View (spheres, rainbow, N blue to C red):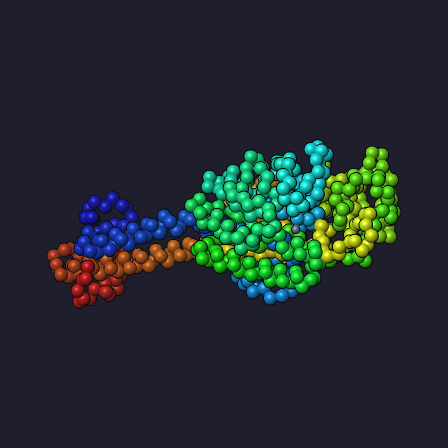
Length: 510
Ligand SMILES: [Zn+2]
């Protein structure tokens, strides 16, 4: 490329063009290659800021049902420990949603809504408009949910993922609520609830979805332990300790699979739960029959949140009897309208006219002698109780390393997940205030990207300049016919004598 054809007014460009014009084809070839590399770097690296990389990452959320925030201190959990060390952790767990039940909280995680906003107020519900009672799948796996309980205008994250993103695909392994069609949308892949399904098979399946020809970018993975065993044996039992170890082992298996399939380091993973647990006992029973005639009301849910629908005209008497009894027993009772605001519970039609909440560890029973009560463990209590709080940890390219916060609200997970997936969140009760602290700061990673770009630029320019100038000087020396070029003058200040260090008397290899 002769210098006369150069139309650029840029001094550097002009200088490089002129130099190349005097150089041999090998030098031009090398320099052309270097410039191409520079352009490729420019086009690919620089415009794609770190936040873009992060938001484009696939995302997986894992729930171990009933995994209390402090379970990790019970036994050796090397895999969880490693995630905490290399990722982020809420060392006091999450403040979850009242009622601290499974369906309510799994639905809050994926919608960012409190119970009164999303309407899954308990595992058992009665809807006065639908005039139907909800039967959860864990109680009857052949039950078919009425979508009217779920498809009420709320938008779980897999629906947003599939409606907002052209290639948004989601996969749910038994996530509560995902069996329902919402806004005419179901998860792209869905494994229906069956508590007997092998846990490693669940992991293998979701890994398969992440690595298929049309991969999912959002995965939801559910395990029904240690909840099931804690109900039977109590959260402090040795059996639950073994299940904590098993959950750790499964997490190790999951991360081994992520590494094997080259997803590790690219995928963001949150590991959490829906609620904690407390033990119950026959010494802490609240006999309803002793206080109020059971024929005066209908029970929608028994314990530890007692949801009552009084018969017509019986509301005042039922409330008064319970209120009087609560003075000397371990529970509180409310008219629906008086349920404390902080519970974010009362403003939904599925909340019954009278609600009583047992104190931690206490159980309501009716028509049952003490010795028939199966003491074990339970949850569902006031979400102010620390024992009801689930654990939380996360790792992946978006998250800081070895960073901890004390706690945050589980409804904050939804805006966090939307951020990770680059989705516009639906209206929600969550906040990014605390969870944003878990993320690598975008300007920090953007700076790293910019620095990488500039270093690459300097290296390429230096090599290119040195080789080109050296080659030119050598060629000029050999020919002794070309007019000398004052490179330093064109470049504006560099001493040409210094640039020619490589040339000397060595033979030009290009
Ligand atoms: Zn649960």
